[in-house]
Length: 79
Image (tube, rainbow, N blue to C red; front, side, top):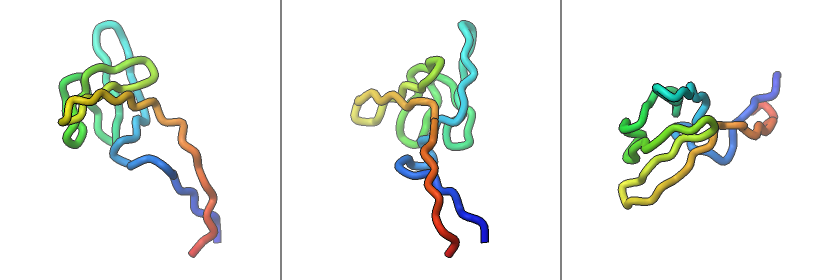
């Protein structure tokens, strides 16, 4: 059987897998959804999109910077 590759260490719905950045409009692909500033990602709000990250604000007012995914893959033997 082939090896199974698994992404580790990140919740799938918090992965920034793509960013389209321009001075006029920027969008990001997070957890398979296209989002723009002002959109919600789970309970957080997208505050800004940078060339390599998305800045979100959590419900308790904390700011988090979600960097564009450069995933670490781990090979796991077939079950």
